[in-house]
Each structure stands twice: as C-alpha cells, then as structure tokens.
Image (cartoon, rainbow, N blue to C red; front, side, top):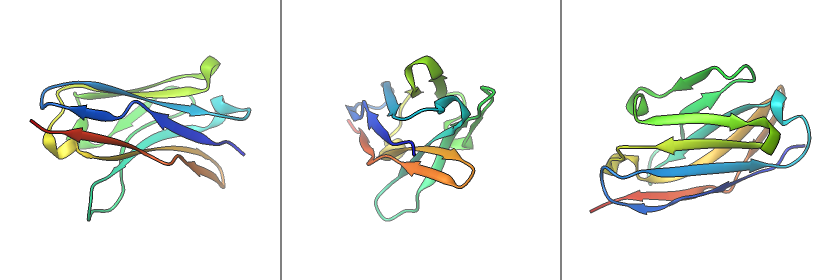
Length: 115
C-alpha cells in the first residue's frame, strides 16, 4: 500500500509563497488520485486541491487562482504551489493518495501565514 509524507511547510508573510511536496512510496503512483487537504485548529479537514490520473485538477473556491497542484509520476511526487498566501490559509496541510478502497494520509505539514 502506498505511503505518503509531506514536505515544505513553514512560516511566511501574507502575500508570500510556499511549495509543498508529497513523496509517495510504493508502485502504481500514476494510478492514484492525489489530493491536498488542510485543517485549521477547531475546524474540519477540507480538500484544497486534487489531481486525477489524467492530470485534470480541482480546487476549493478559496484557493482558485492562487494555488496550483501538479504531479510528477516519474518521481512519485505531487506538489502544491501556493501563491498570494493569506492568514486564513494557515493550517496543517495533508497529502492524500486514493485508489479505490485504498486511502493513505501523510502526517501533515504546518503552514503559517502571519505578519
């Protein structure tokens, strides 16, 4: 079963950028639907962006035009480029890999947007 781990979180000022990476182990990465989720303190975990096996993408309305999800199947990695960050983007960001009944989560990486 695939395992995933996130990298690239940190602290940034409003208007800044960060790129998150999610490295997946195991085979058949190209067949997984990959997604980024986030959870702020006291709130539920919500989807931020997802990328399908054909490369098509979906975004939460709150991040459209600012975030970009991409994948490199040769490197078993999915990315989330985050631009024009806002304080409300502050959260623990999780990577998710899904294939049928298989569903794997990473431990999360913290993103803090503050002046």
